[in-house]
Length: 172
Image 1: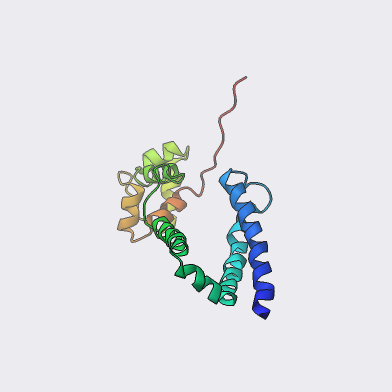
Image 2 (image 1 turned 30 degrees about the horizontal axis):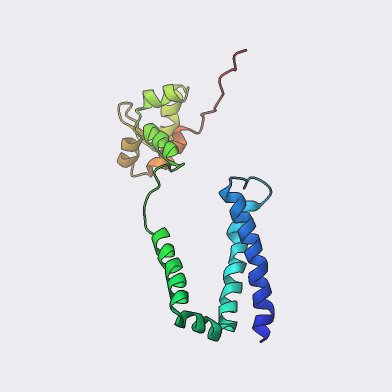
């Protein structure tokens, strides 16, 4: 009975936190305070409290599962959990744009990369050579990285180390 004395209040309290933060995230209001980190990390208290709550209420849980309705409801949630874990890529993945941009940069030759990032091609070449990457201006960053047995992302990072973004001036 001692477990039930604290497991149930922990489960209820953490449920309130997870429910409120989850709703805020669902309605895209998670930029307020620490909503997202609280939801992600403090949900562990909900999991722990729930597991202890199940342990403390094992016999009533089994009674629920002996009834068809209880099995159907729990089974439906287990099935939904398994479906959520399927590796299906969302159609509107917010990272697609970043991945496409990265692919463009990785496949760009040095002259093109220099032009895209408004860098001097000689300085870009020098940065790569200083890092031990042999440079052929006709090759892409990806190809240069493979020839140098380097991670392409690391080589791209070296190539972009002198890049500074300056937003275009707004017109009146």
